[in-house]
Amino acid sequence: MPVALELLGVRLEGRADRVGEDWVLDYKTDRQVDARAYFLQVGLYAWALGKPRALVADLREGTLHEEESLRAKERAEEVLRRLLGLLGAEAGPG
Image 1 (cartoon, rainbow, N blue to C red):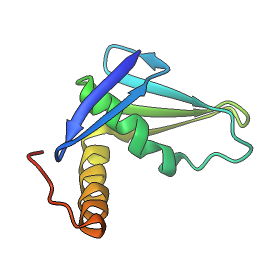
Image 2: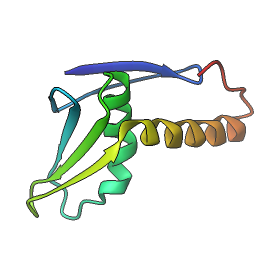
Image 3: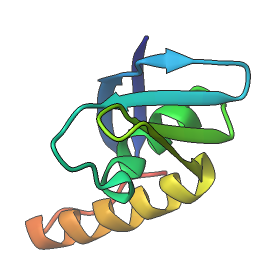
């Protein structure tokens, strides 16, 4: 499912693998999956779609990891503020 949102004046787009009643799931097949690294991505998808739960499925290991989408949004805002600061740009409305 396509996902698009604007966060601090920055437009972000992506594609969610699966969307359920209260969750968004992203499948990963990397050799080693660091679920925390992917929560920023899938958590923003979940937040943009109004879902409280973000799930990362490590298909190689057969494990499922979960985080709240609001927490991912807050982390993404922090990352974007730092990036925009490095670029000398100001954050827009969030």
